[in-house]
Amino acid sequence: MFQACQDPKKRTELCEHYTTVPNIMKVLNPLFFDALKEEAEKVKGNLKAADRFINRISTIRFFDPACGSANFLIVTFKLLRELEMEIIEATPGLMRYPRVNITQFYGIEIDDFAYEVAMLSMWLVDHQMNERFRAAFEIVVPTLPLKPNNNIVHGNALRLDWEKVCPKPLDISVPMYDLVNAAPSAQAEIYIFGNPPYAGKNKQTADQKEDLKIVLGHLPSYGRLDYVSCWFEKGKEYIYNTSAHCAFLSTNTIVQGEHVCYYWGKALQKVDISFAVDSFKWSNNAGKQAGVVCVIVGIVSKDRKIPHFLYRGDTVECVNYISPYLKDKKSVIVKPLKISINKLPPIVFGSMPRDNKNLILTNAEALSILEETPELNNHVKEYIGADDFLNGRHRKCLWFKDSDDWRKIVNSKVQDRFSKVMKYREKSKAPSTQRYADKPHLFVQRSYRQKDALFVPATTTERRLYIPMGYVNKNTVISNSAFAIYEAEPWVFAIIISSMHMAWVRFSCGRLGTGIRYSAELCYNTFPLREISAKEKELLNESAYNILDVRERHTEMTLGDMYKPESMPADLKQAHEENDRLVDSLYRKKPFSAETERLECLYDLYQQIIEEENEKHR
Image (tube, rainbow, N blue to C red):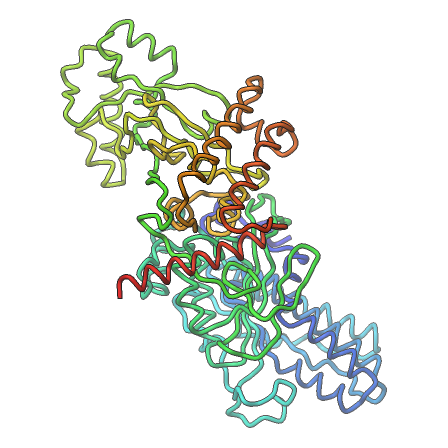
C-alpha cells in the first residue's frame, strides 16, 4: 500500500524498484533462512538446544542499507518471529515470551517519506506479531509504549559509515551458535541484504555520479559501472575479515561484460561469491514495473569455508566455486581488447550522426534532392541500422567528407537541413557534439569506408540462436546501432554466425534488458580462435555461401523473421547446423553435446592465448 502511494517520478529519479515477497525470499532463503529453518527442526523439543537457538536468532543483526519502506526488514522480522513461535510451541518448558525484537533490524534510506514509512512499518509489524503471539499462547506482549528504534537511519547510504549504522562488536573466531556466551569483544552474526537502486552510466544523475566517484573512484574505469556496484563495494568492505554475509538483488549487468572486468576482478581479492540466483525477469506490485532482468549475488569474506550454491530456475546445485559470470568453475576474467587475438579483420562501431535526424532521408526525400541537384548523387548513400536490416526497411543519408565545402551546395532543402543540424548541436550538452556545430554536413562519428562490409547488429534478442548478420554493399553507411567489418571474407561470416561464437557472445557480452548487447572489445576481439589453414577457409567460405543462398529462397520473409526460433525455415536451420559442425571441428574432433562444453573449450583456449601473449611481452 505504501509503495503504491510513492510518486512514480520520484521513484524513477531515486532508481527505486519495489520488491515482492517471492523475490525477497530469493534473497533471504539462501542467505540465512534455509539454514535457520533446518537448524530449527533439529532443536524442536530439546529444551536446552531450543533455548540456545532462540537466544542466537534474537542476537542476529539484519541490515538493509537501501531499505526503502522496509520491505526486506519486515519480511525478515515476521519470518523470525514465526520461527520462534514454532519452536516455543514444539518445546515444552521453553519460556513463552518473544525474544526476537525490532532493535535487531538496521536500515538506511535516503528518501524522507520512505524513511518515515519504514519506521512506522517496523512498529506496525511488531504489533501484528505481538497479537499473533497473544492468539497462539494467550500471553499479552505490550507494544506500547513504542520501543525506540534508532537503527533506521535517514541519509545517503553511500556517504555514511555502515559500521556506525550497524556496529560489529562481537570476534570472527566465535562460532555462530555460541554468540550468546561470547565475550563482549566478539562479532555479531550479521546479514546484509536488499534491493539497492541501479542506474547505468548514461542514466545516472550528477549526485549519483559523485557517489560512484566517492565509493569506486579508486578503480580505473569506475565511471563505466552501474550505480548498484557501489552497494556491492560498500558491502564488500563491511564484511571483509568478518563472518558477516551480504547479498543484493541487482540487475544482471553486474555479472556481465564490462562489470566483471572493471569491478569483480578487484573485488574478488577480498570476497568470494557464496551463492547466486541466475537471471530472472523482474516483477513487482508497484504501478509501474521496472522491466529488467535480475540476479542475486551473495558474497562472504575471502576463503570462508562455506558451501556455495548456484540457483538456476527451479534447480539448485552445490558447487565448489562461483565465478563472477555465475559459472560453477574458476574462469579467466575476459578483459576488453582494442586489437583482436584471433586474426579476424578489424570490427568498427557504425557511424553516428548526432543530427536530430536531419542528415537522414527517406527514399522520397533523397529522390527530391537528387532531382533538384543531380551532382549530389555521390553524397547520398544508403543508410542502414539494425531495425532497417532486420525488417527490410530502406533509408538514405547525406554523406560528406571533412574537405567538402558544405556552404557551396546549391540546394535549399539540404542547406535547411544543415542549419537545423547546426542549431541542434549548438544546444547539445555534450562537448563532443558541440564541436561539430560548425561542420553540420558531417556525421560526428565516422567509420564508413567505401567497401563492402559485414553488418553485425549491436543488439539482439536472447531468444535467437544466432545473431542475424549479413553483407551490405560499398555505398551503404552502417549506423551506430550496428558494427561493420569491412572487406570481411565469407569465412569470417561463417565463424561469427556459428554456435561456437554465440556461446562466447552469451558469456562475455552484456545485456540490454532481456537482449544481448554485442561488444567489439569484450567479445569479437577476445573470441578464441586458432590460426585457420587455407583449406579450412575454403570449406568455411562454401558454408557461408550456403547460408546466404538459403536465405535467398525466403525473400518473402524479413531477416528478423527468418531468425525467430518459431519461424526459422527448416533448410536455413539445417544450413546453420552444418556450419556449426564445421566450425566446431576447428576446435576438436569430438562433437560438442552442449554449450557448456563449448565454453569450457573456449575458456581453455582463451587462457592459453593470453598466457602466450603475456609471455611474448615479458
